Image 1 (cartoon, rainbow, N blue to C red):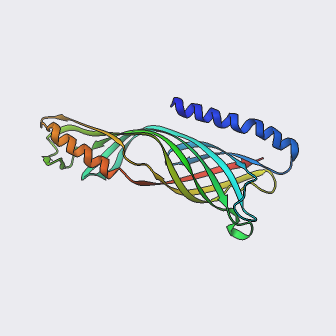
Image 2 (cartoon, rainbow, N blue to C red):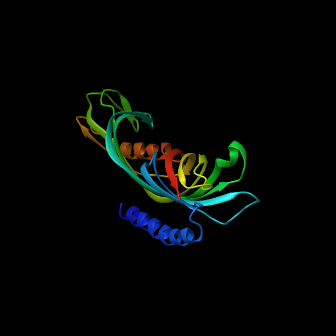
Image 3 (cartoon, rainbow, N blue to C red):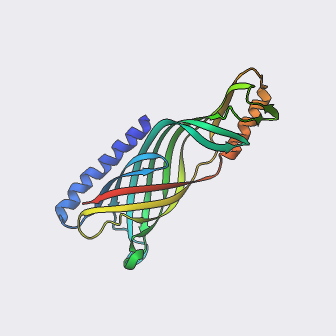
Length: 235
């Protein structure tokens, strides 16, 4: 959380002096946007800047940063991981996304389509709880509903990872005003840190718990899709 706070403060420090400089040059043409949004990583505050960089004639490149956070717990959660059904989750998520948005077109309905890529700092901590009303297997040990009072897995990630995405909107141009942005992407999250534990009448060996832990790591590894929706203001 401290790292996310520092990154958010850095984002504001980065944008403040250059805003003043750009506004002094041209008060009517927007060069920046700020916005509020929601994504897989929670509620977010975003800032973007239109650069002078180009890949081809007529395109536009923007720098964009998003700081997001969410925490809570959810009953009725329903997911299967490594053959076990989990029906409750406690979660605490903090993320900071920094990347370049490339708008290759300058006319028609495609002018607001963008391709994005960059880095995503994730600080995710979640604990999932197995459905006590169902039978399942831990390692190779069969668990029936009356055997355990609790089986849970704690899954954490704290790392900087790459992402790519495709989206529409928030192209900084024309007159100051509001705009909308939608983004669909993939983050390459890699392996998580996982710990498992159980309590109840049935004993599960350390070897079986370790086998289950490794299965959870394997099942939660790999590319993860994400979506982001933002209402922004250009100035």
